[in-house]
Image 1 (spheres, rainbow, N blue to C red):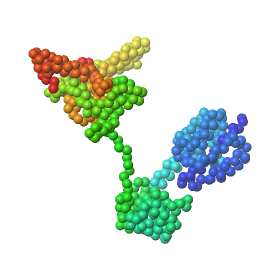
Image 2: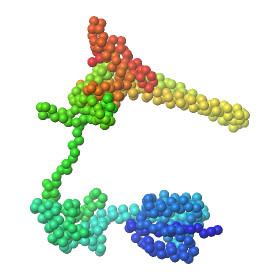
Image 3: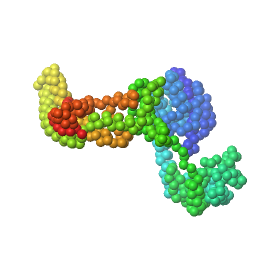
Image 4: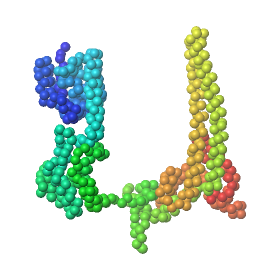
Length: 522
């Protein structure tokens, strides 16, 4: 059998957990020497400096793509943990071995053969690598918490301090600490800007890495860093430090007051409040209606709405917000009912709900007993068949009939249980909408009007300053009845009277009659 050709892979993480691992150069040297001794042919070499804790390594992905596109190649690496330290990448390699895309895995420090035992040991190695990474992360977090409890600085000392290896903490730098204090004292006088203070520090030998004066952001960081008060920062939280502070609290707060006094509020674009935008289309060109401010002849400012003309030329005029709002309120008035009727309708809904609930419970109980009886017949049928008292063909036929009966009964039971919910809540919501329409028809809150119209209105258009919108069938019924009463003959009854009126709503269970109403609709 011919030996496969190999892809050589070397990885070195830049994170702290791989400090003891060989460098990439060392790995390449050892792997090339191993390939020479074992007479392995190297197709290509891949190397990257990235942690394998999480998926997403570009070079590893490139190598695996070539592996999966090949047929029976090998992979040469220093150890399995160089290939993967997470379950996804490890599983990808194991699957490649299972599917014979990888014919051989070769490690100078680890034995592997493409056998069930070898695959098991490979997965153990990947699992150990993942455990090591996970455990190391927990150990690092625990170490950080312990250092915070002891008040120790966590990393490199900031400007003004120096690390002390013997105490594993920081201490004031003989020269830099004095410069920090002097910078604070100068800025507290109120005579310096960030630029002039940066120049002041240049004279003291404090510059950026490129030799230029410190940037404004670096100066602000210097003047707000609480480490100079003896605090330790981890994440977004400050902790008490166990090292000598450079500044007094009074000097630090004096600088913060100067900073606060000089801070200018950032200018923000003013967001105009146009409550009726994004709702109406132009009837002529079907563009959306937009809004803007305008100044009248008297100098007063007002808001008006017009076609945005996004689809070409349009001749529609503008309309003032006050006039448009009045039209909205007039349309809401046509679908409103006074509290007398909405309260009456709500009471009817509750009565109907209680009645329907009683009927539903009785129906569900009856269906439950039928389901239980059918299940009993099924159990008896199975027992009879197991006892050998019924032929198999007859058993299967009766079993199929019983199962279909059971399925039909279960479906009827579910329909009965959810039937009430399908009409009660929509009906109750309709009555509340009638009440809300009455309230908003005399309100000046255009935001509330907009939300309500967006909920119940459809096909909103504007043509020649006139608003046109439609309402669903239940609301149209109310509007038609109000219009009919308004046209009634005064001799017959008052124009606002409503006699023998049935208010109906098409709910989930069909047309629901709420009762007979008489009297005014206002």
